[in-house]
Image (cartoon, rainbow over all chains, first blue to last red; front, side):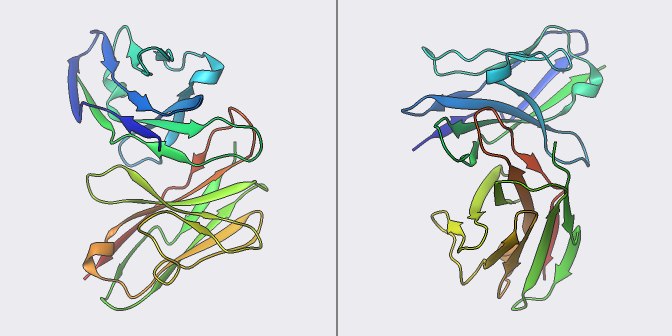
Length: 112
Length: 115
């Protein structure tokens, strides 16, 4: 069965400092990985997905199959980045979509 | 991306009662899911709502406790039955289209408190 691990429950950095939110996964097949973000009092929303290889709000994440990791990085953190971040995995297979398996989340606080 | 509306947004219920949560998507979607997010916890999948057939439940969740309906491709309901304080949680509806790389989108959630 697939599993997503976010080892840090809480993470604090100062504004302008680099930030890395760790995510490791275990899955026997080829997964799709996502990062979701939940700002205070807002709904859970997609931040980025590995398949798009995109940068959103300055965040990037690279899928490292050798280390089974999908860490989220930003070179210069901003106060508005403070939020709960969830790493999520979906089975990658042809046919119908599969549900997401979520990590436990990391609460990021960016200090002024 | 699909816009998902849930109602009620919150409710306070008495022990032993049942509550039905509605989820409306603004476009037809292949998949709909129900998640639970207990206080301070991550999201746990309750079930996949299947259009025109019985929902597929995850381990630890049963139909008698969480009956689900999905009469069409844009609407689903989740009922929390015979509620107890342990059912106090946020219940989230999610929707996705099939295919690789298609993300899931989430509603605002229903915050449920049982006295």
